[in-house]
Every structure is written in C-alpha cells, then in structure tokens.
Length: 92
Image 1 (cartoon, rainbow, N blue to C red):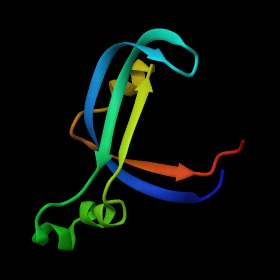
Image 2: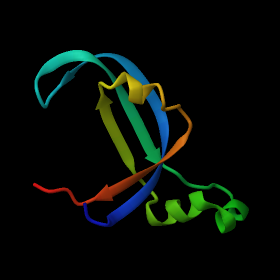
Image 3: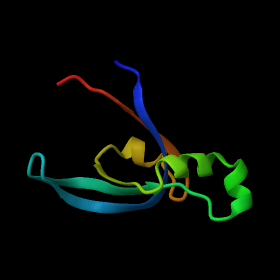
C-alpha cells in the first residue's frame, strides 16, 4: 500500500436504513446509506485554533455518500460524529 494522497475529516450527517438497489450488481438487499460532509468552523476564534478549521481550509467543501451492507460497520458509526477518511492509491 502506498502513502496517503489525501486525508479528509468528514462529519456523518445521516444514516438512512432500508432496502436499496445497488447499481454495481443490480441487487436489492438491506443496506444503509451514509451521507458525510466536510468539517469547518464558523467563528474566527475557533478557526484560529481548531483542527476542523485546518481541514476546512484545505477541503472546504466535500460530500461523500456510501451504501453499506455491513451491519457491524453501521452500528459503530454515529450521526454527528466526525471521521477521518484517508485516500491512498489502490492497485488496478
């Protein structure tokens, strides 16, 4: 595995459960849709000393949506919490 290309700090905005059609394999299974967005700080005081402000400066806008079938993963995630997402180059 190669070194990280980019690290984002994202907040989990919503978890929506239910059966979903997955375009990758055209199957319908129980799954949860996770919606994440970039972190930021609204006030100048917080921006000067916050990790969120640093991440928000370099990645001011981000959206990430995933359809997840692994219930073990879903139960560990909490709406409103923040998570690091690391991008590394993957083999073909």
